[in-house]
Length: 475
Image (cartoon, rainbow, N blue to C red; front, side, top):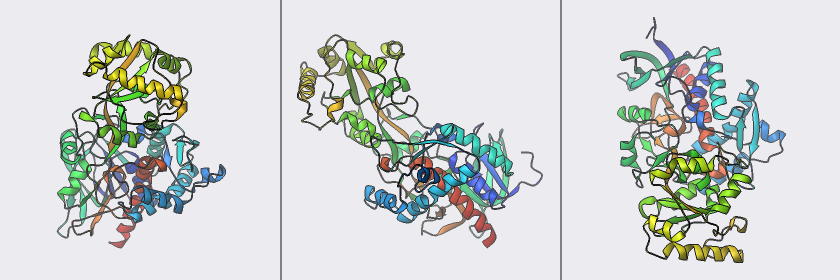
């Protein structure tokens, strides 16, 4: 590997938001730090993210946004019904505003604090310049300036411990060669196990082969290495669910999530207020209850025309609200022969395509159009602004599958980000953060604290880096 003395104070595994924040924080405390990233560049899920959660940040203060830490702590605990660790959540929230200060003082600008959901109060979603990818680039630069050794295409294989059970280093591999990198503490930030189908099948009870990932396909390396040396687990099987997704096209996926569309299951029944798409974790829950976890998004030519000419209502991180979907016809034609889109002059034909008995889909749409005419959705109370009848042919049906951003949970930690063993005692010298860890989010991701996953990655990494440095002085 080219080291004359492969011996460091802190070894960080993973080059996403957690690992980069941890490495920089540890280096600022004077530790000698090496970061191992098995891919050819840093980033992970952070590079795909958009906004960072924070409470009582300098940006919020300038914008007179009242986002009190105590209030948001209570929100998180109430939302989870106290099924998460309040000390971890407190540590995260208390650190969050200061982390925005930390980044701003280093030169990172924040573009805005957005309403992630309609009329959101308080706003917590801080968008850095260049979004997640820009923040990764910024942190990589700052790590390099602080002397962090950034090793790409270098995979951690095993966490080494001494005869007293203390962390002693990492067995790593690069270009087919293994080497021991010695260190006094290790920080895990490998970004979950969303790409590991075997682990998903094992831990996620609603698993289906159709489950669609649109985050980073991480393999659970950190989780497996921590378990191998006796780490306890918490929160295995929790996903950051999204609602229905059109497999193979992010462009079409943003269309099928629009609140003016109608969602039906394999029995031809509406099963949710489609405006729940603004709250995608809950929309994911609703879909997980449906037969085979499959749904169909329906709209007509008029709604399609509105998307093209007026633009999106909800939008996404990639295609913002107001984006005019001018390439929609082309994208639909591209996928038409793959069997997951149906265009027809009649709902009866689309119902047959879904596999419904004659008349079922017509009845569902007749009822829905009646709700639109009277301006009140008797089934689910859908906001009347989104009640648009589906009457103008051609009609469109799009098959949708369950989807998720990534996993949340795995390694059990405390509020200092120390990894705990089976007796809830810290494993000396071992820390973890980000979505590799459990105890900070319950079964349904709390969108009220918008940007929590991104924010927890940065803040838990920073806390882990600082505490790993403190651990060195205690040894």
